[in-house]
Length: 565
Ligand SMILES: *[C@@H]1O[C@H](CO)[C@@H](O)[C@H](O)[C@H]1NC(C)=O
Ligand SMILES: *[C@@H]1O[C@H](CO)[C@@H](O)[C@H](O)[C@H]1NC(C)=O
Ligand SMILES: *[C@@H]1O[C@H](CO)[C@@H](O)[C@H](O)[C@H]1NC(C)=O
Ligand SMILES: *[C@@H]1O[C@H](CO)[C@@H](O)[C@H](O)[C@H]1NC(C)=O
Ligand SMILES: *[C@@H]1O[C@H](CO)[C@@H](O)[C@H](O)[C@H]1NC(C)=O
Image (spheres, rainbow, N blue to C red):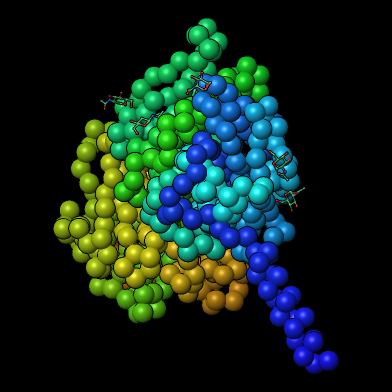
């Protein structure tokens, strides 16, 4: 009796193992004779995505399948796999789920539509994690067809669809890995995301070459043949392509110098002939990519950065976990973050210096100390000033190859736009601190997980809870003026700026006089109206970013402030 029972048990275990899908081996050769295409869709499942999902499901994928099967391309098998990310009820941190793989016939009919049954109800979104796992989860056999023994080639294409940047708090997948993984697996990536190309909704897609500075832009133009034209733009793409939050570092950088393209989800969402043209060109280009053989040029990796909490512009401050988003109007030196235990005791201090201009204020400079090194950075209001304004250990333009042992890189997309990146990888793989300058405005982004910034305190709040805590570590300050004042740099804290600026504690932070009343009066006098500002900022889509942007455009009376976002 006992023996019988144990045999049944082991048979059951065996059956389980036999049923488990074996995975597609990207490194093995295809040995069959069929011409196969594999389209792998990585879909954002957040609430706003319903329309875009319908487009993929009902328009783009059936059209691609039909065209690939047609005598123009002669694919005998079109496989499609799909994964979702961001669905709020999955219980893994990245909210990733693999929906399955199936086939399309030559009439563009899908064999099992369950694979495309995405949700639109999301929470945490991490497109890197989803791309990595979405590639990994492709089974070796789809609907009874073993890919490698059936196909002579498997031409692979990855489509990422999202309207946000990634929430990176939960992922350890670093960017170089993702870019390399896409290459080594032989995929071409296309990104449909929240872009504003030249603030023109007619500019619906772009291939980005020349290291980011030679882009081919697809423009809807109903007077042109096929309703579209293309043109080249030789400016660094970040200077004229707006996006949601960290979309560029998270996703756009992955396609720079690759055959794939970036696609403007807003053009798609606008409907009508423009959306129809988007669909036609998207399908046409993707089919050409697929039929051109597998993979893009390898060896890429690129300079990819991650997103995180930040402080920028007219001090708009986003706390850890994006829990709060607030403005502080005072002028003084402030503790953005502080953690004496950072990196096994090297210690980290990030101080920002704000400046009041009439009724608004902005971050004028930032000073960072790690270990015994101090780096202070500021921008320049002079549009022709091409100097880098920084002090390393209080020395103007001191040697900046490294800072506290971490490599520092500078990127100069234009005279008035400059980025400094402190790469923390040697201690924390894939993590970094970036300082972005737009004219005289400074934006500081801390891109790191709990291991890096988990113990920090300051204006960004508590890392784990995002609570806006006072210096006692307990009191929650809901009034952001109180919070800012609380984190004014104290004499007991290190002096990081090369010049002492008024006010210094015990003198309190300066406040603009009646910011609301003055602002209202100014707005009535100003030449750029609220409507103009809203129009200039609309491409940002993120309501918070639009709000910040409108405010900054009005405050500065400079429509180009959009470029700071
Ligand atoms: C596809 O196959 C048809 C019929 O064999 C042939 O006429 C056509 O040229 C092929 N097309 C391509 C692109 O190879
Ligand atoms: C369709 O796909 C789903 C998920 O991929 C799978 O669970 C289901 O069994 C499939 N249906 C058929 C009829 O194969
Ligand atoms: C499997 O492929 C066959 C032939 O293409 C098709 O008729 C069938 O519906 C497919 N079934 C599933 C579950 O994908
Ligand atoms: C820019 O890219 C286009 C398209 O890839 C290419 O034909 C052209 O030669 C490039 N121009 C320069 C100046 O690199
Ligand atoms: C096709 O591949 C060739 C080389 O492999 C490349 O130069 C060309 O840009 C590719 N075309 C497209 C449309 O991807």
